[in-house]
Image (cartoon, rainbow, N blue to C red; front, side, top):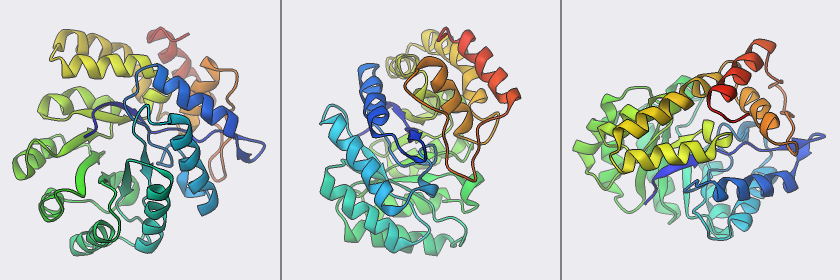
Length: 293
């Protein structure tokens, strides 16, 4: 259903509020440069510091501005099942094509709890669900057997995963346990090349915020099985992938965006603050290496 380069969009702020004009420009720029879908209100979008009303407004703007040109996979995760369902209900109403649901964080459910959480969402809303496993942030890890169980129970609802576990063996676990129809998207830019080689079909990307055309070209080279070109493009992007996490995300990516666009700011919501001087130097060097400045 989904493939290619899919940016996990930043949420632009200005003077403490969502900068709707800048966000619409960002959506257009992403589509014009080859992004195959858009993810608003993910980790990079600072969803954890948005009110529910702001969260819904960001999704609504993204759907409006995309205007059917590419699918919108709305970030709807929560550590409260009912609040996740609230986000999903709104996303369905405003026209999103699917939702991205991170594993519940902080309360640390066991695997049985994860199955119950996602089963409840799958049976109370008909939008396709992309699981999001990022144990480095959530502590909770959606084990491969749990992914396979959910996809088997709900083949038309649990349709894919954004895997940021860092464990490349899971691509094969999921492919062999579910089948090739299960949409596997990398959640780690720096692992996208081996992830795709193992059976992945794309990446929900931080780097694509800044380098959408290069990321789209890289993903297309992977889809075309042009490994030489994919490797060359990966080499151009590789320092940027790491620079995006030289400080607390999305600080470095917001700084990088100000280097390529004068209509965006570095503004973030507390407790996040602008990135350090060391991170800025890493971003500056990576942008030059990638030919973006």
